[in-house]
Amino acid sequence: MRTKSVSTTIVDPYRAALFLGQALSEIQPEVVFLFATVHYEDWAEFMDGLYDGLDNPYVRIIGASGDGVHERERTSDVGAAALGLSSGGAVQWHVASGDQVGADPEGAVRRALGKLAVPLQGRKPAFYFLVSDFHTDASRIELVLRDEIDVPVIGGMAADDNDKMERCCLFADRAMVHDCVVMLAADGPLSFQVHIGNSITPVGQPGAVDEADGKLLSRVGGTDAASFVERETGKPFLRSDQGSVALTILNAGQVGEKKLRAIAQNSHAEAGGLTLHGGIQGGELVQVCLAKPEDLVAEVHAIAGRAAASGFHPSAAVIVSCAGRKWLLGGEIDFEVGAIEDAFGNNLAIAGFPSFGEIGPLFHEGAYTRNLFHNMTYVLLLLGNCDGG
Image (tube, rainbow, N blue to C red; front, top):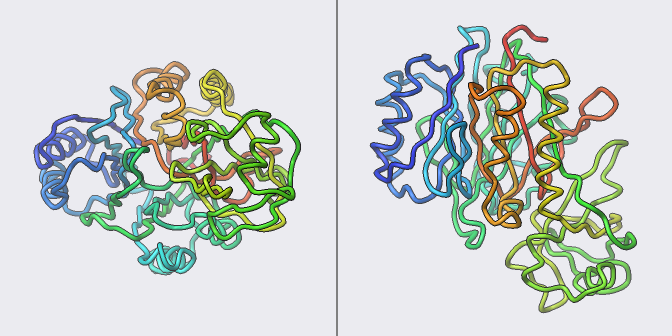
C-alpha cells in the first residue's frame, strides 16, 4: 500500500490545505485522514484548498480537530496534518456521518452505521475509524460500539485547546460538520494492529459508585466524589490535580477490559461532585489513579517496542492520544511520534491528534476485547498492507 503523511503550520486556510493536497496527490490517495486545529476559521476555503490540491473529487476524507496535531515531521499546537492511503483498489473506503450526537449518542452511531451498511452489502469491514464531537456523553457512544459491533473501532473525540473545551470540527469528505459522529469503514483485506496504553498507577482502595448522572460523579464509597479522591490519595483535591488524577473502572465488563475516566477541567469539585470525560454508572467499582509524566513516556516507548517485536510491518500509523497527557507533560509530546519512528524507521507515514477521549479495543490473550471508550490513553493504529494478514 502506498502511503504518505504531510503537515503544515501555514495560517491561511486555503493555502494550508492546498499544500497538504498537493503533497499527497503524488500517491493518488483513495482516503485521507485529516487532523487540524480549530484556528482555521474558514473551513469552506480549507476544504476547497484540499480538494484543489488533491485534484480528485472522489477522495474520501475523515478527520477531526485536535488540541494540536501529530505528523512524522512535527508535533505542533497549531496547524494541520494529513495521512493519505492508496491501496490500488484492494480496499474500498466508505465514509458516513450520524447527526445529533449531543442529544442522541447511540442514535448518531446507529445512523452512521446504517448509511455504511448500504455500500458494505453485508460484508464486515476490517475495522471502523470513528471521530465524534466532544459535546456528548461518549460512554453512550461506547454502548453501541461495544455491544453491537464485532470488529475493532478505533478513534477519538474531536478537540480544541484543552484549557478551553469550547468547540471542535469534524471532517466527512468535503463537509465540515458539528454535533455528529463520522465513521470510516475499511472494506477489504487490510492488515492492522491496535495498541493501547492506559496503565496509570492505582492508589488507595476501590470504591463503589453510589450516585452518578451521566458524566457527573456525585458520590463514591459512602462520601462525595471529591472527598473520595482526597481520602484515597491522602491529600486535598486541587484544580491543578485534574490533569493527573483519573479513575479506573475495575469492573468494566469482560476479562481483560479496563478503561479510565479522567476528571474534566470544568469539574464541579466545589460541590463535591466531579465532572468526568465520559459517563459512569452507579454500582461500578472505581479506583483512583495518579498519572506520572515519566510513566506516560515509558508506556509509549514500551508500546513501540512491543509493536516492533511482533514482526508486523506497518505502512502507516494513526495516533490518537489524550489531550490530558499533553497537559500533564507540559506540551512535550513529540516522543509519541518519535518512539514509533525509532521502532519502525523515520520513513513511516504518521498522523494523529491529541483528543478529548479515545476509542479502541484492548488486546488480551491473543484477541481484541470489545470496543471501549477511554481517557488519559494513547491509541496507536498501525496499518499494514492489503494482504489480510
